[in-house]
Length: 213
Image (cartoon, rainbow, N blue to C red):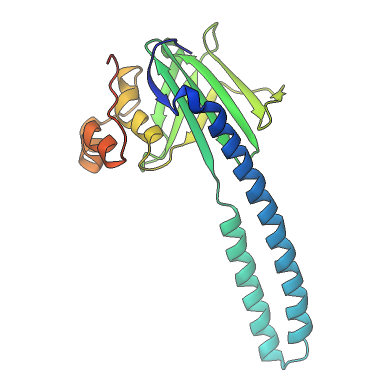
């Protein structure tokens, strides 16, 4: 990570607190998830015992309702939370990506000259993909959320979600293109959807950042 960063999210002094909050949130959500599983399982058993005493039409109606409820619960429980930390300097940047769906974080230190391909991975600008070559300044590591390094083989690619209307999205929409080439980057199209960089950052209640300030 460069000593002189033009962009930090969150600010360096808040790094430890942000990670602790995310880890605690994941722990609480996991506990609530398993509690809901238990409640729904008990409810299904009680419902089946009840509907078995009813005429067949009510039995099938109860089964349908159980299936619908199970599908809805499955879809809501799949909601993925993530956190992306960005520390960008003149020559390189550090990205730390947390996701609760895999219970790990990935840390990418990458020199801009080592980036082979960079692009938005969807049309909503809410997912980004980086392909890179490994060098003395560029490496990707994987850790558990309690900071135990995982010795797993990793490809030289990192794809991550960007929260809409956030500093992390704003960085890749407006600032990253001044550091490295973004494939099919269209500034006019972005400004038509979100406004200028200054308007975007003002709308999310953040200071306007600019490389070289």
